[in-house]
Image (cartoon, rainbow, N blue to C red; front, side, top):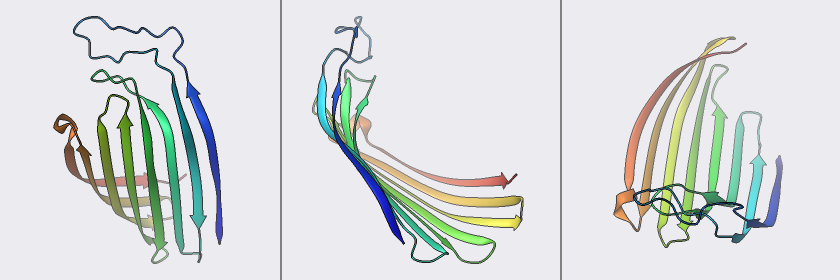
Length: 159
């Protein structure tokens, strides 16, 4: 019913031969700074019935950036996914992602993304999906704040 794994470690990120200064007017990041951080990736899955599935994936990693004079940032968050089979042909699923991006230059972004959808299988080899997606980024620098709403319709062919 319950399974999972967690990997916890310490990451040292070096930039060999990375330029410390970029040309004037460039928005590319400066390189050369070493980063050391505690990192983690996890995966926890719960399947209480044959019709329901839940997965939780926490993470903390070092990422690289190439915009607005930032070189690296620490990304911490969790992704939660659930799927419930309603009938032989119909299933509902959802995903929530929360992510905190902590940039070395002081900028902090928090993102949330939700996706809710239906799967419908007409025949064994053909299916359709309908999804609603909402995403929002909060930042201590308002140039990086945004939100979006999307509706996605897709056709699936199973081989």
